[in-house]
Length: 317
View 1 (tube, one colour):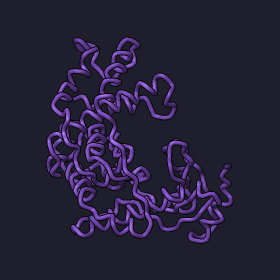
View 2: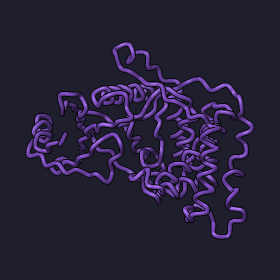
View 3: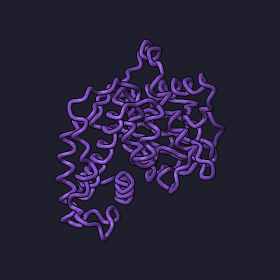
View 4: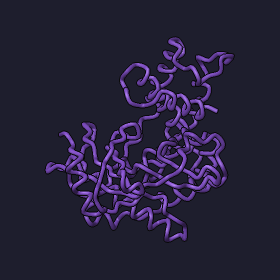
């Protein structure tokens, strides 16, 4: 379905004063939403759900869940006396298509610097991650489930298989020169570097998986904005993939965003076990190797190569 900006603008004008001029910004879109800026109201953005073949639900369900989860997370912060203004808020939503595939949400625009562009992670940023994971670990979602909001289970990849595939992908990229910017030019035995950095996988064989918690499920630098001077969160974006899953999933995201050492410090402070943390490190490193390999082979055509290389390099430090 082709989205007509004029129809969107007409709908938005029922909430914001006209005229309404919408400009799509595809360069900042992910897999889940079209993004429109509003020329006359720069404090707002319009998000419209995209169809995805790998999703077992439509845009209407995703939008309802995302909105409900963000409200629950915000309440979790406020119950601890913590500010929650960095959690996005929907001020108006409406269906764009009758089939429920496309649903629009008008939201207040949040500003800040992407963590992908921050070289030195401040202690305040680590504390913000501690607060976030603590809230996600303890938040009660029974209320929203009781009113019909479906919270999916997030599947944890089988780590041995993922790791084995990542080892093969790493070797392939070494031979094809695909790891430029990830490994140093003078690195000795670069072919075995990834295996050495993940050799501790033997320590987590057969362990009991951690109890499921609410996971953001895409907790990477492009979705976390901070104040560049203080390190304080100014936005945690894109809750479209949220669900119940192994906390190692969000630990993996932190490994790619703030590095392994900082991610470990955060996870320990939140109370996660050594085994869960090691799972997160394996998942973060192996998953990133696979994504870079898929990007280089043309399977993934969207992810920026520079970002995948930067994430992988950071995760291996």
